[in-house]
Amino acid sequence: MLLCDFHIHTKYSDGSVELRRTVDLFGQAGFDVIAITDHVVNGDTSFGKLAHRFRYSVTEDNFDDYMSHVEQEAKRAWDKYEMLVIPGVEITKNHRSSDNSAHILILNIKEFIPACWDYEKIFLEAKQQNALIIACHPHHSSEIATRDTLFLWNNRERYAKYIDAWEIANRDDVFNVISLKKYPYIANSDFHRVRHLYSWKTLLNCEKNIESVKNCIRHNKGVAITLFRN
Amino acid sequence: MTIFLIFACLTAIGLIAYGFQIWSIRSKLKTNTMNIRKDDQCFLPSACFCPPVSILKPLKGLDDNLFDNLESFCIQDYPEYEVIFSLQDHNDPAYKVAEKIKEKYPHKDISVITERCNVGLNPKVNNLIPAYKIAKYEHILISDSNVMANSNYLQDIAKHMKDPDVGLVSNIIKGTRGRSFGSIFENLHLNSFIMGSVCFLDKFLKMPCVVGKSMLMRKKDLEDIGGFRAVKDVLAEDYVIGEKIHKMGKKVILSSHMIKNVNEYWGIRKFMNRHSRWGKLRWKIGGIRYLSELLSNAVFMSFLPIFLWEPSKITFIFAAGVSSIKILGDIYIGRHIKTNMNCLLYCLSPVKELLIGFIWFVPLFSNTVIWRGNRYIIGKDSMLSLCPETGLWSWRYRIMNTIKTRFA
Image 1 (cartoon, rainbow over the protein chains, first blue to last red):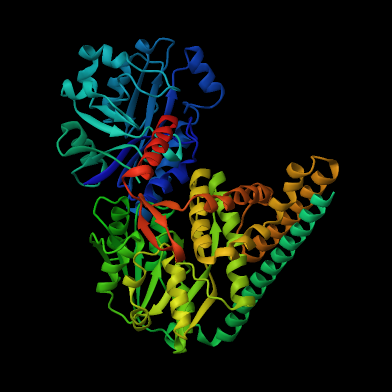
Image 2: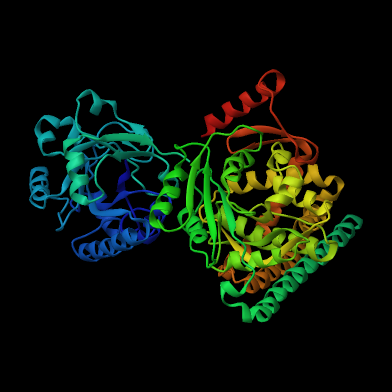
């Protein structure tokens, strides 16, 4: 089984650890697959403007640098730890109301996707790039410091067809609604700080390459979740 | 004024002790340089005394830098050796790392064993017993999972075993790579007090002070002192093994080869837990000698007049002066042992000394430790016994746990 975490932030957005150190942290802990998913924040709201102002977002301008850095680290991680590093982003649509906010992981992204696009356009563009679409922390979370992102769950009838998997567990939270709806699932850490290493993770029973990982998640066979603790 | 003078004298004693510690570290490192020159002709492993060695690595949980730590023992510049990673179960997160290392070096003699062993109360010894059973060679090296070694490490320490009178070889430990307050404190403490004390005991008192992060010995000598079973219920198994071998009439050598203890992301609580545990075992082993640790803490002594006499200009200047001396001393040691620590971080050294000063008192009031998830009572010579789960003890811990959980 491959030990995986598909939701990791670095200093490219609001993570507290640099990309290289993040890769080393997961490599030293024996992970098989990780995805670097820094925020791409919508710039059309006051929250988004603040995030752009304080550089808590990957933008169209630095997207190429971000991607080439992730690729460079992916090569190093493979050579040193035999760990697969998948480039990704977290499309972050923050609004005043939790009901209108949503975070979406796009894994194996190739071209920049702006977060201010409407949902359908984002999903279609991600499909076009053969990327994996994951709905992040889709239900009420226990984190005091973060606001809920309920839009996708509230509009699941409309958008579920685009979503490859839903986060059934995120860091310390478990969202039982995903299980009740029998949606495809994965579990991630939403890593921002070193202590977040110890959290919910995904176990995949597949080959260690990007296509196999994507297929495994899409078909949701051979997927398990585990609470990774020291 | 009398109080101030008393503490000024105690501080002076502490500073003198600290001076001796620096001296002993320097002279130990000088031995290293001289040995390197002397062994210039021995640059090829084949030209040195290199008996086959079994490296026993007891693993439990993820340490900082675990992959690199384990890997460093698999790429030793040494003709014949095996590495045995020993765990209590497959679910330990370190198991995956050990397996990855084994897969990365298929041509090396690496074994990963998982065997639940509950022979004694010391979890590290429980972990070592199954590894020892399958160790192939006469020379065994016990090495903790949180140490990283240079490629010439094995060659450098094995040469001491050429002398049949040598029973055990241990090493100096250097703390490196602190990225959080807890790990910076830990590294500062390892590189000043711990390193200084170990070198001081070795040079001036000729006392064996073995730290279990690296212990090379012969199976025969270990068997002669009763094997691992003799230390199965002891918290300070490393110290006791060293002492027993010393009492048997064999030499216990402190090699000047420095090994790295990588501490990157420790929290303050972890730092305090470890040193209150170590303090408790030193109190139980050393008895009244434990007082010398407080006396050697010059910074703590220099701050006491502020609270016990008066917070005046003279007391503040005195404390600041002693703290500056401590910072400069630590920078001096750091430069000598090449820690690559930012000079500004040494300013945290007096803060760490104050914390250590307060931790010093913990063993006087508590004789229990939580180690690797288990709770024990420490007795004389660091003998462990399980904490009773009934009666007053259990209520005390239930209340404490409830408070901790609430705060978490």
